[in-house]
Amino acid sequence: MDWKEVIGQKEVGERLRRMAQEGRVPHALLLCGPKGCGKMAVAMAFASYLVSGEWQLKDDDFMMDTSGIARNKAMLAQWGHPDLHFSYPTIKLPSMSAEHQPVSDDFSRQWHELIMGGPYFTLEQWMEAMKAENQQAIITAAESDELSRKLSLKSSQGGYKVAVVWLPERMNLASANKILKLLEEPPQQTVFIMVSEEPEKLLETIRSRTQRIEMKRLTEEDIREALTQRRGLDEEVAQRVARMANGSWLRALETLDAGNENRGFHDMFAMLMRLSYMRNVAELKKWSEAVASYGREKQRRMLLYFQQQVRENFMYNFHQPELNYMTIEEENFSKKFAPFINEANVIGISELFERAYRDIGQNANGKIVFYDLALKMIVLLINHG
Image (tube, rainbow, N blue to C red; front, side, top):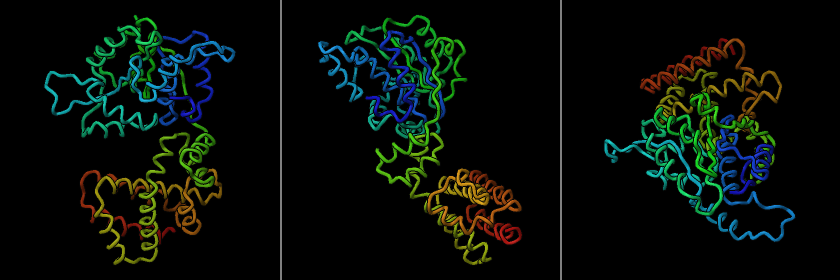
């Protein structure tokens, strides 16, 4: 993986490359920072940089034999290099025996498919790839033993051996203690790169044996540029998505992926508000039956979207564009509708959607929940709008 695949984070990349070039790579790094800022992308790029041997290249060294680097990079392009190891949370499948502790190799095919799609992904995507249902994904003690065994082997190419540990906070206690022993007595020329969303959940003794690097949120410019260059979005749409992403490339991708569904949710939101203002009870009953036909998870996503739109419409009244995060369609609707969400009813409407969200989560009858919501919306819009 090349550094150019990393979105933003230029300072961190330069710092890590300088460490390698000056021979100051610590035996354990802990990459932290907000979700979606690219921690795993940086980890994978740096791991590739170390294992490939590219760090040995000097601008003025024209005599160096680069064939070994080329071979390493070819293997890394398919994430099949024998000196690069990934460790990640796994689940126990029904097909596994009672005494078997899951290890990363049990899910190597699914992991390979995931990372071949790029270095930006979520735990939810990984759980879906493993076909997890209600299980809790953890890193087991057996995984730590397996990692120790792999790292004890001599480097196949005579360079660095690198272990990328994704979400180390999901290690159980036995696993954490074994990893701690590895960090205390690391094998020669071995580098651990830990990528953590919640570093405070790691053992203090593990944190103290790593060099922590805090990464910042991506800038709007970083995300906008990536959206135009990688996704082909036009400048205006890319700028809006970049603002809504709030420094997270993952959120930007979610915004794009949710676009079609959110457009449908916006239509239902606009219809609810118009019918409520018109006091059209008969059509509101049809509206409630339509949304009741959605699955419960979709209903809950819709209600979360409704809550967001209430906030956006309320803030729109302040006429400060930097406070709003809306698509063009949403903003066009808000130009006329926003005044109906004000200090007199914004809390009541928000609480109405929150209660519906909770009731749906508790398996309440959807038709009753949404028809009741629609009738109460009439009162909140007419009396206070």
